[in-house]
Amino acid sequence: MQAGYWRPWPGSFVGYVCVKVLITLGSSEVRMIEVKNITKRFALKKRKRKDPEKPANANPGLGPDGKWIQVLDKVSLVAGPGAIYGLLGPNGAGKTTTLRCIATLLNPDEGQITVNGLNAQTQSREVRAQIGLLTSDMKLSGNLSCRELMRFFGKLNRLKNARIKQRMDKLASYLEMSDFIDLPIAKCSSGQKQKASIAVALVHDPDVIIFDEPTNGLDILTARTVLDFLRDFKSQGKTIILSTHIMSEAETLCDIVGIMLNGRVVCQGTQAEILASCHAQNLGDAFFKVALRHGVVDSV
Ligand SMILES: Nc1ncnc2c1ncn2[C@@H]1O[C@H](COP(=O)(O)OP(=O)(O)OP(=O)(O)O)[C@@H](O)[C@H]1O
Ligand SMILES: [Mg+2]
Image 1 (tube, protein in one colour):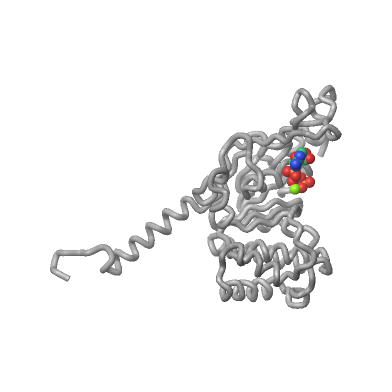
Image 2: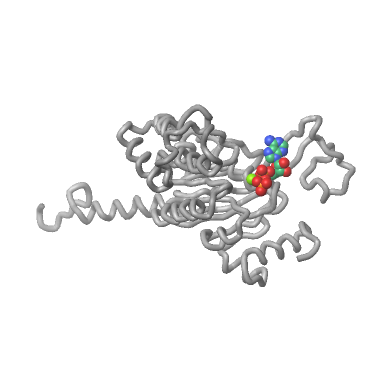
């Protein structure tokens, strides 16, 4: 190299490191889930229509003619890389609907969702390639074994056979699946099915993890394995959003918490911020106080 002449790329190591750092910084800005003001309404079938004359709090979100129900009302949240965002809320609050919108299974009526900088509505295929989704709606086919399902979903995600095998071995060992990995799903226990669903969701090693009640139906040991798994993902810088009803789980796992009531995120922040704003000792206490403040419960 001539004196006084510095080639930043591709010849110099310094240049290479600079570009790497820029790429890493740039990608960490977009490696996240951003939900902006989404609303979602569902049309109600005739037999499910409700009486619009009833008081509003009996059917929150019900349209004036009783023919539709608004289940999400301007929901906004940001889940960043290397942190776990936890959605808490009572039954019917809209947690699963929010997660389904992020996962491109539903289109919001208004608002925008981006995942790693991709528009979830217009680039749904690309978004799907980046996410691992676990939801109770996902019913795995009963005749196939967990191994066959992982292979099938690996192929769907265009993984090479060697990579599928590698991922299968890793997930099977981490989730302790050896005694049922070749059993048809129909013959698995509910906890084993949940483990199989987790393995299938993660076979392509996604950057973004969307888990709806991940420890639902799991025994305490398996639940702990799954939570450790999520912590491990977090330490790898992945973006994780989950819903849970288990306050202790949220307390030990979540960096950011959003409390949903009647289709709205009414309170969100770090756990310390939420406890301070509610003058609460723990997340359960904060949750009740928020529900009380919004008229969802009458007394604590
Ligand atoms: N396809 C649908 N058609 C009509 N209403 C729906 C539909 N899907 C969900 N809902 C309604 O949307 C509301 C929110 O449901 P959602 O499943 O998002 O709640 P959730 O917070 O996940 O509740 P849970 O804690 O019980 O899982 C509920 O009132 C539910 O009945
Ligand atoms: Mg749900």
